Amino acid sequence: MPSREELGRRLKTVRLEKGLTLKDVELLSGVSMTHTSQIERGMTSPTIGALEKLARALDRPAGFFVDDGALDATSLVGRSDRSVLLSEKCGIRFEGLTRGIAGGSLHLYFLHATPVTSEPALRKHDGEEALTVLKGSLDVLLGDERRVLRSGETLHFRSSIPHAFFSSARIGAEGIWVSTAPPVF
Image (cartoon, rainbow, N blue to C red; front, side, top):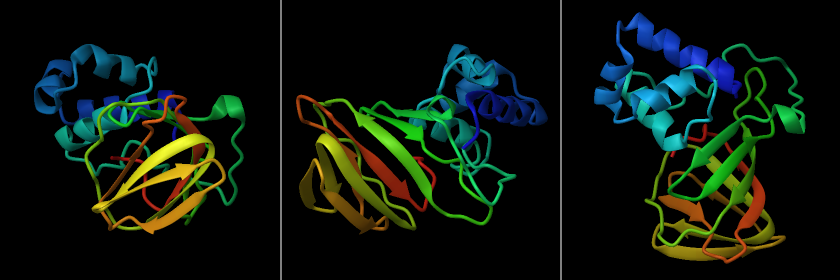
């Protein structure tokens, strides 16, 4: 996953290639000019929802801004080098534990879930996912089923099942999330 600065450069490059102003992007995406400008300058980590809206407005695939083009055969990421994505609706902060490897398909994240009061919308896509809860508890919606994962438990599932995860626990949750698809919800 690219750094905030690289993600911002990609966004600005695509916007300028299309001849769009920040105001144009705001009208097309619903993401404010101020927020888009801050993302372009690497001053803030965009939410997953904002990235999804920007990609759609700029006619790019959902994972365009988070996919790394030139990857090595190995990936080492230190704590201070982790990329960060936020999902406000789910109350989850994702920290990239790897940037990926050439030809690889895994996306690995440390997740911090703060308690939310409403359930996020279900999403589905190709691939598979696994969640391991390290601390607290995580609510997982899989189709019509609701599960609560507690510390030490792991759930592995096909991403084609409509799903969402969040924490309704007072203390929230921390865990590891692995997916074969980029984190665009």
